[in-house]
Amino acid sequence: MNLSVILAAGYGLLLGSLVGIEREKRNFEENATNFAGVRTYSLISFLGAVLSVIGVDALTFIGFIGVTAVMLAAYFVSNRNHDTIGVTSEIAVLIVFLIGYLAGQSEFVLASIITAMLVSILALKEYIHEFTKKITRKELESILKLIIISVVVLPLLPDEVVGPFGIINPYDIWLLVVLIAGISALSYLGIRLIGYKRGVGLAGFLGGLVSSTAVTLSFSKLSKDLPKKALSPILFGLLISSSAMYLRVLLEVSVVNLGLFKWLAIPMTVGALVLGVFGFYFYNKNSEDNYSLKDADYGINNPVDILSAMKFGGIFALVLILVSLSNQYFGQEALLIASSLSGMVDTDAISLTLASLSKSEITERLAATGVVLATTSNMLCKCLFVIFLGSPTLRTKFSLVVLLCVGLIFGYTGLWIL
Image (cartoon, rainbow, N blue to C red; front, side, top):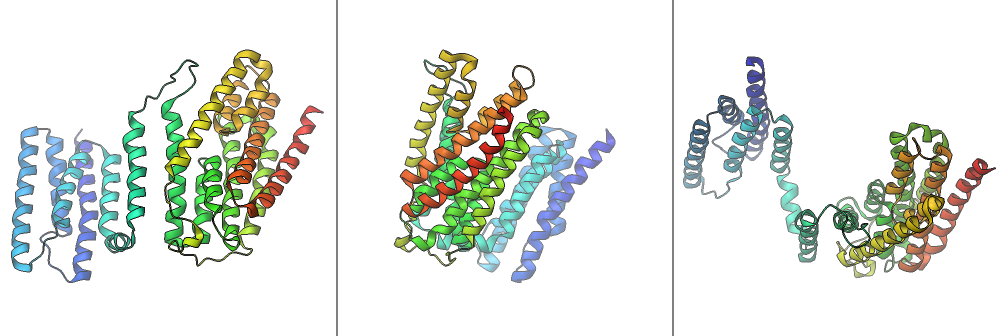
């Protein structure tokens, strides 16, 4: 017990010192005088940890009030002598006390996360101010919309099936809406920070690790108003996101049932390689990295397109109903049909379901065939998205690469049936 108390207090001391190091270094760089440095922040965190370990709420409250009083006194003295109005360091003091308290409660993970966030905010002062100067009113509104639909609306939705069919989960469907809008925002942010070409590519790959279908929708709409010379990075983003999808599916099903790896390793790897190789080919061809989002010619004027995301959420719900009705009326004989239908909007759910069933109820070969059909229908569905929503220039190239990919996979998968 004594050792755990010492460790908790020591950990609180360590976390406080990290914040103090950042503050003292900042003061040195700016040639400023501040009431708190490494020792002060360390002691304040240590105080919070010790009071937390003692476990007397009254003492903890008195300690917090005392720290607050010292902080206020230091602030007024600093404001009078240096004519400053910033309260960053003073607020950091209060947070450091709470970090120490959490460490004393053995909440080491939470205390570490808060410390990392606090140090990051303090250390990135210049970047935050620069970002604030450059952000536009429209971008700010888009950020607020994304926060509302993700942090406010999403938690309020029931995470259970509702409706006459017992299929629709409002939380899951709205989560997909948030995901699509988030990918749109991620690509926009990436373009602003690291340039058009690299930003689109990064957003495509990271988005593909979560939902390549959402990436396809976002990028297809994005491409429609872009000039021809700006489309190669978009095509790369489309292809690399689907390449990541194949690798993601292979990993998911192998975790649930390792026996499926021997069936799916080759087709999933072939799909990832074909899309990835062609993606990098287009990435390095006929594209530049000097596009400005302020140029109306590029058509990127809505960082978070919530309306389009909501439309896809409705389509997703409709397909879920069709899949359920198919299973209800045709039974297990329609498993492969259901796999194809499910794959149109989501490969993860059907792939994980088949992997689970393959451990006891169906053969691994049948499950692997269903996974191949799901990923194939998903790729063909993406072709339709690009054809109907995207730029005409993308249609032929994307469709040909996808057909080549699907053809090679089906050629290999046909050996299972024969």
